[in-house]
Image (cartoon, rainbow, N blue to C red; front, side, top):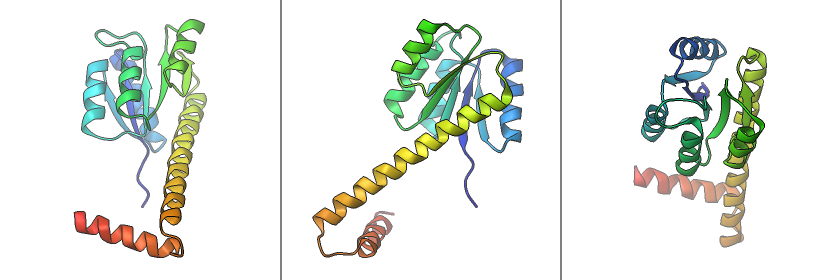
Length: 162
């Protein structure tokens, strides 16, 4: 069984946060909902997430600060901004910091889900590309070896570590 896409949702408007989390769960996502930036950073440090959905205006750490921390500590996590206080300047700034998408509240649920799906697909493609690059490096180091024999050896090494 494939694991669910894990999404960290951050918004200080509690009613909105709960509703959004429920709607994403109904779409098959695994959601952790937190009401502020510091809790988001703490949650991301405790467990891996595929995606983060951040509000910008929050007490304590702002969404932009959380974005910066998440991209620094978890560069493979894709981040989408969902804000009621958007502007062109903040959209540009967030994109430059690594946000995949920037949406304004109120946002169409289908549009939000489409952007999250695209962000996840980008993450998967990047991971596949890195895996392919790693395999090519291994093949270059072990000429004459088949990819399958290299994979078996890697699996043996991983099992010995466990």
